[in-house]
Image (tube, rainbow, N blue to C red; front, side, top):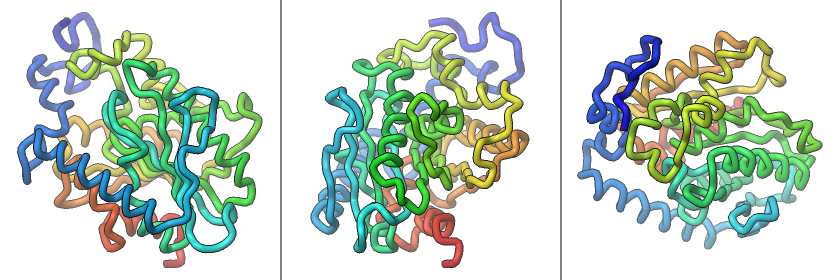
Length: 306
């Protein structure tokens, strides 16, 4: 593996790090303060299974709905009471470093949001090594277009992504919707503990299943793509919230702040939130709680009158 930053200009902090430092910065489980790294991952998986089981038992659902032709292209829809399709929709894209995670363990936010009248959609996509990053971005784009086409009377579509899912959600700011024959009624983005410049990942073990080249990383880095464009957003009134946990690593904090600053410079209605007393995993685990800070942020963004 090359030395991070070797042969490249620029003054990004990560380019001055050793390979060991970079590995630590981009390994979220090493920054958990309540548990050991392995225990934190196991707890997150267990809580995801429990939350999804509870959501499927409590709500009217459409499960494993295909949004494309591939076997991995499906989504789950959890409906609130009332006529289906006339509500706000919140679409969730799971994390897992583009190589793990599942819609079947990611229904954390379902019960609190559906109780307030929001339909929740949890999206599957083909993780590596089966799926390339280009494919994942295309799949997520298709899933958003699918929801708009199926429920054209929606009261707004809100995209929420965690970690790798936050990256995929952010790429939707750059999507060419004309290719999909629909303009989604996008009203908000909740970008939670994400990575927006993928180049540092090339120099960590996380790239082993991804096999990203430098060109791949730059093409799929919303931070770089947004910096390079002078275009104003298609929907400037669309709220974009960049969110990070207090105990996320310094690199995750830096990436989130830089994305927020770039969004502001490019004309988006953006805000930055640090959620206190949570790590990379708790920030999503606690979405099962209606009084959790991030749950309240999501609800108040969808329903400003609350």
